[in-house]
Image 1 (cartoon, rainbow, N blue to C red):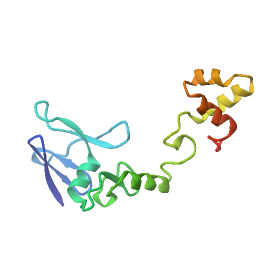
Image 2 (cartoon, one colour):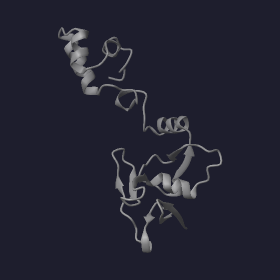
Image 3 (cartoon, rainbow, N blue to C red):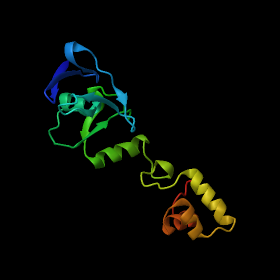
Image 4 (spheres, one colour):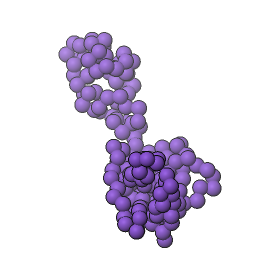
Length: 161
């Protein structure tokens, strides 16, 4: 099934597998953005040219949003799988719960969305502290707050390593 949509006065179409087509049914090239999502540039330099996430286009066209949820979730967790059966509307909370459930995010280590340091930084901080560095020196070296350094040293954070 193919559905049509418009951006900046230009007509495009999309299929249920996540392909976007321009004039004469020619498939348009997609690229990955810095977050790993396929995006496509639509419009022209004079009228509303922009980069659009493919999964949002496909979800808008093929997936009903009766609860008016603001975000699109990939059911299998694979950002490049933009088939409409793999997309669902979700709240931010539902998306985060889903990511934890699939193991895409974790409460520990670098996968924790609040992590301010890498695992190698943590190991080096602990080593330097044991060699006699002061918390204030480590704070300055790693440009982090005193409590961030202190909490990893006493085991309140980064308990996984």
